[in-house]
Image (cartoon, rainbow, N blue to C red; front, side, top):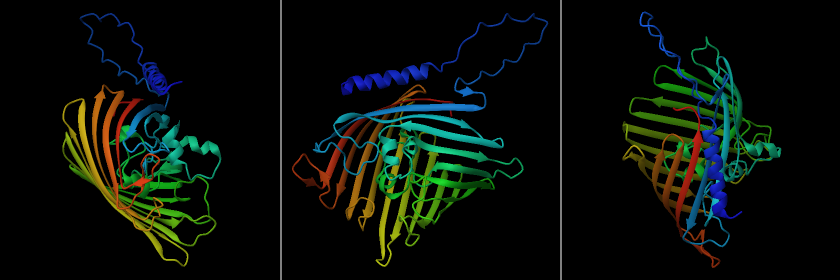
Length: 381
C-alpha cells in the first residue's frame, strides 16, 4: 500500500471509529397535558460511557519533510516525529478509565512510533510495549482527597505529554525527548493540601522500565501550586538506574511555570537539571530551558511558538557532548471536537556537526516542515 493510500486508510478508520460512537436519537414523547407540570428532561448519556467505564482514543499521523534529506531517513534529536520525508503513524491509542469511587482503574493501550520510542529501553515482556499506562486507584472517601495508584503511570515531569493533542506543538521539546523519563512502574500517592497546593510522592522501579534492572528503588517528590492565572509544578526524582547495581544515583529536578493571563493567551517556561553519578568517575550532567506560548487567534486557529536551549555537557542524553538550540512555530486548525491539524516548521542547531545531511556527512543544523493530523474521541472536557 502506498504512503498516500495508507494515510487515507488510517484517516477513514479514525472517522469510522468516531462516528460509530455517535448517540442514537429517539422519537420525542407526546407533550403532556396543559394541566401537568412540564417534566424535567433527563440528561443525555455520553456515547463514550459503558456502565462505569469511560472510553477515549485517538489516531495520530504525520508527514515530515527534512530539508537535509538524511540518508538514513531519520530526523536527528526527535522522538515521536522520527521518520523523515515520508508519511508515518505516530500513535493509535484506546483508553478505558473508571474514576475511583473509592476504587478505579485506567488502561492506555496502543501502538505506533510513539509507543516504540517510549519502550525502547524496556527489557520486560514484549506485551509491555503496547502499554502507556495500566494502574488501579484507591481514593478513600474519608481521606481528604488522598489517592493511591498502583501500576504503570506516566511521569509527572515535563511541560508536555505523550499525546499530541495535549500539547501546543506537534513535535516534542528537547527537554521532553532527552531530559526526562516517559513512565514509571510502582506506587504513587497524591493529595491536595488547601485550595492551592497538591503534593505527591511515588516509589517506583526507575526510569522507563516495568521490570526493575536492579534491587534499588527510585523516589519521586512532586508539588504543584495553582492559582487563578498561574500554575507552578515541581518534581524531584532520585534513585539508582544502572543495571545490576544500586551504586551511582541519577537525579533530576524539573519545574514548569504556566501563565494564563486570559482565555486566549498562555505561556510556559520549563527548566530541567539532571545528573548521573558514575561509580568512581564523577558525574554526568544535562541542563536545559524551554519557553513556549499559545495564541488562540480564532475559534478554530491557534499559533504556538517555542524556543529552547539544551546542554548535554557529558553526552549522557544524546550520545554527543553538545549544546543544542531549537525554534518551532506551529499553526493549529481545529475542526469541531474530533479533528486537529497542525502545520509546523522547526529548526535545530548544535555547536557540533550532529545532524545527518544526505549521505555526505554531518551538519550543525536541521530544518523540517511537518503536517500532522489527529482524530480523537472521548467525553468533552
